[in-house]
Image 1: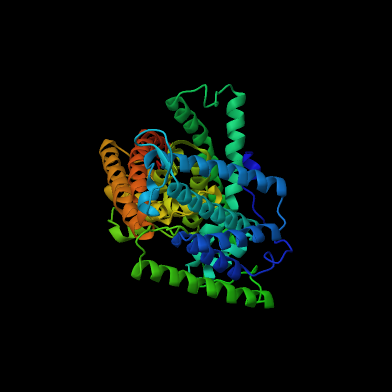
Image 2 (image 1 turned 90 degrees about the vertical axis):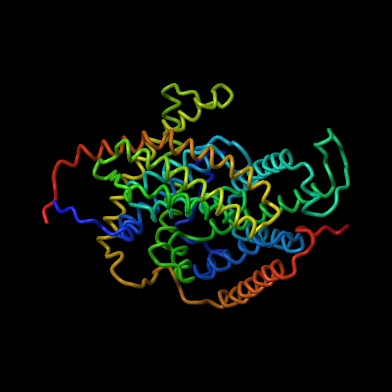
Length: 285
Length: 195
């Protein structure tokens, strides 16, 4: 996956429904969805969330080729992670879903059970939904709106600024990373994982790291001076130019995210006070 | 040159001027990028990542709380762009690790003034070990237990590989990088400020 294309952000807001919402609405909606997906392992919540995520992603009209490539990459990565989980706990379904119906048996320890596959499916869709919500969020928000949104949920504005600057500079830094890597390869450094040892690769990562750190931290002075010159950090509170008044659509979405927060609280209360015998619900148990 | 002792509370917080805000932001971005690209996978979602180097550098430049924020925020941002789901238990574990590694100025190592000697190295190694153990051996498993109880087995395996790989990166690469930074700053610093 091309580094430059993988991390892409908007500086100028677009003109789809989600783009036109205010920063506050976007951030609150995103936080609600992410927390809901972190706390729940119930497929009856995860699948609707996945559908919502896909609708959201399609609605902002992203670059199709790019998004499909990204999704393919993340799918492979998550499948690999699941494989490693299976290596560590081949019969994880027994503890989590509550039974083990053996489908294949490779050896005494390595079995594939229907429950493990169900658990992996739930886990996989959960992370795919989270990822799609993340891309939709990244693609429909500008750094300044992000700061405004975070400030609206009572995060100190210096921290909000921090997050928005970090978000703004991720593409820049990953571009530098790619450039340094290419120039190191041009000098004859072998970066193919098949041809180098683990230690050698770690050493090469450090060789890329040193110029990257110097270049990145050289920026700090410039940015900080520019902000100081514009009077940053003088006041105790802050307003944001990018933040507009609530539109009718914002009000509609407000209802949606308030309902989502209620759902989050309900799920958390349910998990604390009425824990099921097993973590994950499966239709046949 | 006055040698008044700053109180420890102030040292922990660091000075919160614009430069710190931007420094932490850039550090977190760097952390997120390196976590995604600059690593060698060891186990699920854990890798021998060079991102961990950013933490002692920020600690040397800005102090403990900025270092902790770099690790915590950086991990959240890495989750945002990485696509492996959000793991706030790990982000908070990273936060605590950063806090311990950031103790550099508290035991007298001042990277900005070029002071980083053998005793500070020993202090640094201890803080790395304690920080990783507290962060990933205590905080993360505890939070994992609270958030996603059944993931605990995986978390223990991940915590073990995280402690080992982060420790290696932070000690083996961290000390030379800190020495280099200290040397670079020491050369510039033969003037003293007047009160």
